[in-house]
Image (cartoon, rainbow, N blue to C red; front, side, top):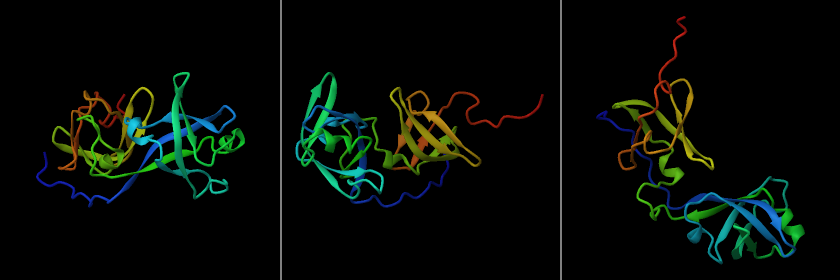
Length: 191
């Protein structure tokens, strides 16, 4: 590993985490089916929690927040009810909105090998002790998460699994990778 490491930026006092997308209206009383993006839904979806909305600027909901009135499981899907969203018409106007919640960065995920996206972005990525790039973002998909790594000349998507990302050291500002062959090698045009 290199003797020099990228200095880490000071931790923000609070950050916002993306926790869900409102998928579709449910019933006549303002319920909304959720597509959940968080590993800790019990913490994020407590009655009274307030969410910042990510909606288009021309939406009537732009710049507003929602407070959770209740949540329940209906047909194996979480359905949320929010204060002020009292009927199906109001719920339909929120479909496709993204919910963000304030988060105290000093609180840790309950799993030992879990990190928040904001902790990973900007970390130096090394392979066999050599720097190959920097974490640009984390993409979340149903099958697995992907680290998007900016290299000198491109972006590489690497499955965020223990076999390919055996070490994440937030304090040192480093992610060590063991990618499958060919993913970070330059491809020569020799025929």
